[in-house]
Length: 382
Image 1: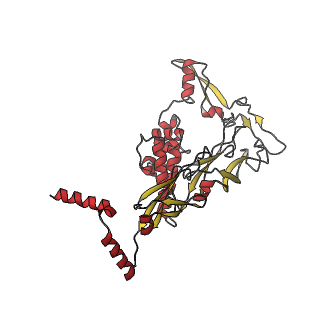
Image 2: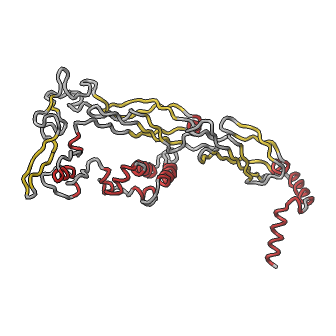
Image 3: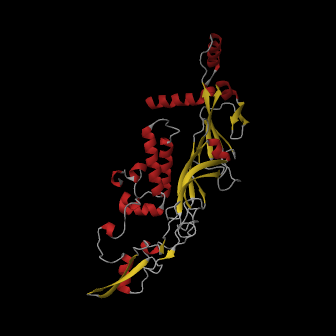
């Protein structure tokens, strides 16, 4: 039931005033936190992951967000009628607000959904998800996905009528799908419209329904589709395949297939936008004397000369060695690597003796930061 669901804003940890960027940022953080790949066999994380995706699907869609903000979960529940009757108002024989306007102002054509059942309707979008590796996201890939969609019935070619027959125009409404009625009131003669009960607002009567689709003209099918994931895509981004969603009704265009891409973390690199980051351990001698070290890159690796006297946590950059822009392949981010000086352990007596001799021969210039720290300390104590 809708009333048992958690508030979508509470799920994402944001306020109702949050903008698109805040909603997306919250989603990406939580989706990564609860992703099944990061929490194998964790039912609680799996439940949270589903809630986060459901919340983002609604709040990232302006139309759905508006309905949710106005009516809560009921506003996005397809089983809940949000028309005049659903809001607790009784307009008697009127077909809806458009009919009321028509009655008072005259000549105003009703545009309620019930009056448009026989017009072309676009099919629904289908949302799916695919998880790829870090490398596949960087360089792009092709993935085959399976999904269920509504398609035009091949048996009757979408007409809903059995082979050899056809749908007839409804004689009750003249094929319009709506009936106009007049009612005398103290304000005068009021005219209203309502869906034709004989044809259920479609304007057509099918005497011999197609057995395959039961007269609907549409059937559910499992489809396979190879999608191309562009190079540079990031976790949470979407790939849209036009016209591969549910089939439209009455000749309407099909919806789109929208795939949300999840990217598994890399064992070395971390990503921020199109820049990548990693840490590289170096020896005490390499840091002190300088050295040419191997730096891993997305392609393979390359040599980099670090200067003598390099301190731990120093960050270096390799320009244009990051990830290419998903919108402009000519643009690439940078690669930043932080060197961490590894202090030697398990020293032999000979090594310890050499280090002690080295320490005895050091002066203030060799450890300038240390000398400066204790000078400040002594000055502060005095």
